[in-house]
Image (cartoon, rainbow, N blue to C red; front, side, top):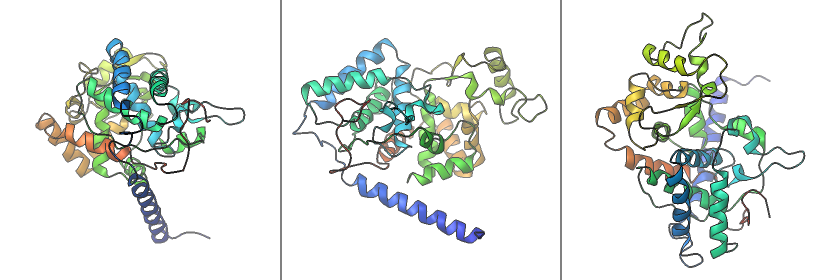
Length: 328
């Protein structure tokens, strides 16, 4: 039986409502200072350990932030992206969008340090949220209080990452649908996109915009032609190995320059350019660009808290993993 457009829309709204209510219910059990009595030094331990890695390699900060994002968008913020594959069950970290994730060794080091002080108390999901916050702060980003109390999931399925993670070629409609399905707003979408102010990307994630974009041997017309020429010098056709700065000149510093680039049609990914295709996201991009990021730091902190609330397990759900890559 065919479903009418009206019925499909109503079913979609119902799905969004259920998702939002689920996120709200779990998030209500999170609290700042959750480990105040059970592991009072956890935030100091995490920050100290993360600092050792970021100091040696500042680009790892972007990787750690990305791991948290990829965790939360699949099954919620439950640490499922950290689990290793097992026979007959490929895990999320082995899904194609996650093959370029880095920083699992940092997570393991932080977890080991926390376990030494507070065995069996702090979840990998909470540790990942703290790592992301501290990594951002250490390269010039904002500081925010992280509500905690998440527990770790016991399931990780590769194909779910393919379904739930927005790809770099996503248009504005699919981006909005993706974020809304997680209980996030359009503002959260454009704010969290600002994370592209740090880090690098493989040419393969955006080279489709440089060569034969419309089948006529041309570049994406939404990409500034001079920027396209510059990228072509670094990324040859079918280049799978070369990496390029996402925010040229300040890719190791968390700042608002991403929005300036996007406003000039120099966003690296199609998903960056897509922010100019919606009046609300475009207005935000232009505002941050023209005001040198007047509210970006505060907005980013708020949106990170919102993202950290997605689908959390609390109470007696899930478990507290002893090692983040393995269920107990």
